[in-house]
Length: 339
Image (cartoon, rainbow, N blue to C red; front, side):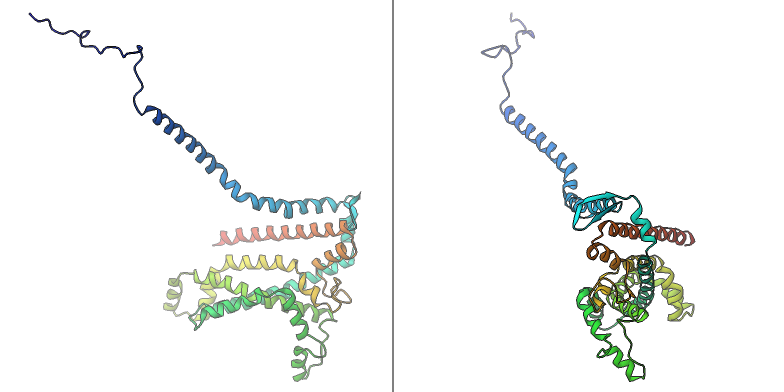
C-alpha cells in the first residue's frame, strides 16, 4: 500500500553549494539600470532647479557691473569732494554738494530749460503721434510702408539728425530762415537766443520720437473692439465723436504710459542740445540758453572735473524720476478707480 506524499516530501531540495537561494538571471543589469535612472532623475531635478538662474545670471552680472556699481559709487562720491583726475582721493563733505547745487543759479537755469524743452517737445509730439496713429488705423494703401517710415527718424542717430537740423536752422543759409524770409519775417538766431534755441532743440526731439509714439498708439487702437465703433455709428456718432468718446477713453493707459516715458526722456535730453550748440560745448549756448540737466551734469563732471558735484546732480535727477514714477502710480490708481 503506497504512502501519500507529505509536504516535507515534496519540498524543494537546497541549492548545491549553500543554503542561500541563487540570484535570478538579469537582476544585476536591472540594478544597474535602476541606479542609472536614479542618477539621471537627480541630475534632471538639479537642472530644472538651477538652470533658470544660469540663464538670467548674465543679465544680473552685467547689471551689477554697469548699473548697480556705478549707482552705489556715485551715491558715495556725492558725499565727498573728489576730482575726475583722482577718483580715489576723496574728502568727506557730507551733504555739501547737494546744498551747493540748490544754491547754484546754473542748476536752476538748467532745470528750467529742461522743463520748458520737455513741455514744448512732449505735448506737440504726443498730439501729432495720436493724429498719425488715427490716420494709419484706417485702411490705407501701402500701410506697411507708412508704418515702417514712421520708425525711420527713430532709427536715425542723434548726431546725424542734429547736424541736419543745424543746417536747417542756420541763421544765414538755413532753409527755415529762408522760408520765413519769403513771408517777410526777419532771420532768427536759432542758436543765439533762448526761446528760438529751445524751440529748435524741441523740434529735433519731436521729429525723432513722434513716429515711435504713433506706432504705440496704433497698436493700442487696433486692440479696441470694433463693436464699440459699430454701436457708436448706429447711434449716429460721427468719426470725430467716435474718436472723442470711444478711442480716447480706451487709450487712457497707453496715453499715460507715453506721457511718463516722454517725461523721463525729456529730463535726460543730452545729445540734441550738445550738438546744436555752435561751439559744440556743454554750456548749451553762449548764455546757457538751452543747457539741460544732462548737459549741466556733463559740464560739471567731465569739463570742470568735479566728480562729486556731478554725482550729486545725478542723484538729484534720479530723485526727480522717482517723483515722476510716484505721480504716475497715483494717476494710474485714480484712472482705474474711475473706470
